[in-house]
Every structure is written in C-alpha cells, then in structure tokens.
Length: 237
Image 1 (tube, helix red, strand yellow):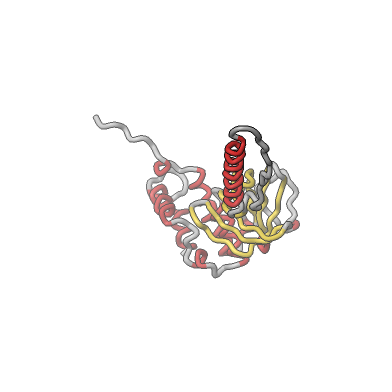
Image 2 (cartoon, helix red, strand yellow; image 1 turned 90 degrees about the vertical axis):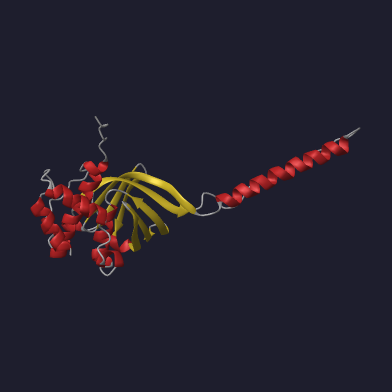
C-alpha cells in the first residue's frame, strides 16, 4: 500500500484563497458601480476618510516594511592613548595602536553597512480596507491612508504590494504584506490609476489561483459555486 499523501494548501480552500475570491467579487461590483451594495464590516475605530458614505469591505492581518537605512553612517571613533614605559614599552604601545585602529575600522565598516537602505519591518497589525482608502491598526496607533495619498503602487508578489506615497511625515516607500494586498491595489487603481498595466492586464489576480478556484468550483466542494465562478470570470474579462 502506498504512503498516504499529506494535504497541502492546494488541496484546501485557505484564508488566502478566500481573500482573493472576495477581491474578485468586489472587483465585479466596482466595475458595475455597485460597491455600496456590499455589506459593510463593522470596525472598532472611527472612520475619517469618507464621511457617511465610507464603508469597510475587508480586514485581516498585515506586515509593513519600509525602504530605509537603520543608521546614518556615524560611529564612535576611539582616540584613546596608552603610555607605556620601561622595557618593551614601545612594543606595547604599537600593539595597542594596532588594536585600536582595527577596532575603529570595524566600527567604520559596520556604520557604513548600517547606512545602506534596505527593507526593514516597521509595523504589523490589522488592515481594514474600504472604499475611500485603508487603515492600519497596530500597536503604534490607527493610521488612515486615503487612495490619493498613494502616488504609485505595484504588486510584486503574492500578497505583496509596493507603495510610494506621501505620509504626514513626508514621502514613504513601503511594502505591504497581507492577504488583502491585491484588494488594496485593485481599489486604489480603480480610483487613481485605472490604466495601470497590472489593472488592464488583470495580472493583479494570479492566474494559478484562478485555475485553483476553477477546480474547486467544478468539484462542487461548496464555495465558490460553479455558477458564481463563471459569473465573476465573465465580468472580469
């Protein structure tokens, strides 16, 4: 008897799959101008981006990374001196100077490395996505982002969105990691950049996921139904 194969995410309808399916359904409503028909999700904080017309349509976890440097290139230069007398004093002083120089060189290299920009995790928490923008609810507070605060955005991987925008503290370059990254992109592009190549080419919705959704729809495993899948795919073409 052969060894039983362990179940993988490809065999199950995961939270990530559900997020993409919801995103596809919302994209259909957006294309019809009917997003307001979606039932709003209640949130524990006061919304401040769209007044009485604002509604949250999805929420889930997020991780935020910023393109920044952890240091400024400065370091503590050791200028200490050693005075040794007697036999072997000169050798001791030379050895001390060599060790001191090596230590300064090491600190200088470390400072230069820390001054190089890189992607650094800066926040995590709950992402709430609405029709006027999104909110980042984290230990640092509740941060609201309107769609027009994002100047450029692109999906760079599954559940990964790069964002260039303007915050209250100046320009930022971020990576948003979340099951709802595709939804953030789709809603932003629909409002601010409908001719974005990833929008017009529909590459914001992964093709391998569409294949998986089709398999689930045809196998009658419950959700999505075959009829619902066909309707969504037809509307998104």
